[in-house]
Length: 304
Ligand SMILES: [Zn+2]
Image (cartoon, rainbow, N blue to C red):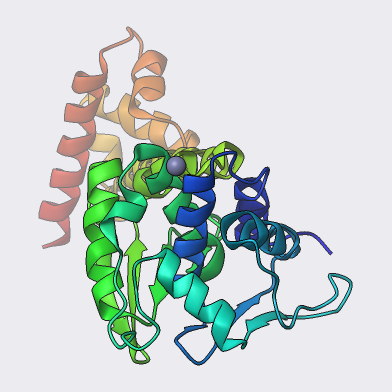
């Protein structure tokens, strides 16, 4: 099965785990604050991304030198669940981030953990892997990060403004908080920042394609409108000529008008310029337009 756009972006973000211990810690922090459950009772990370599942145990080993109490086989179908339930391990993790195991009611982004620029990127990569998703740009522009911790969404908002230069939008959803981006260029910037330049390019290409299609559609609509205007005008002229004929006026027309009426009758689909060229001597398009107007006007008077 082909990877979804989101899964492909995550696979890109997962290429390589951080070299520095500070960054491994920061990435785990992002994962934990945006994962399914992070409390003094248990840690639960659920993911469909095989690439994320592959690096997750390595990251925790590097950051905390500990293993998951429950981890799935990568070959298992569907969602994969990673868990830590051992209170000693959870205590060690909490401590690494400056929390005590008793005081976990309001988790927040402990700023020293994401102080360095390298760690800011690692933190946001972790947040995206655990709580993020990005919509296939063919269907729409949407990237989001979801967390169950209110303070974390507020602080992450500031962090993203700091590194990207723009604030994401925020919304409450199902007791949690969602940070999201809706603008294609912002989504592309964020993906590039996370280390997913291919996904970023995918967003920009989709936008370019959409813009091109819009332009082509606009031009088609415009051409159609012009063509129908020409057809409408020709029909009005033809019916005018028919009225003049019925009233016996066609033969009494001045030579110039008679010539114009004959040309229109024989060439119902011709443009004004084409008709003008058929006159003997040839005349200009505005002059042809005048003759046609006169024919229509005379027919209207005759029909009264
Ligand atoms: Zn770092």
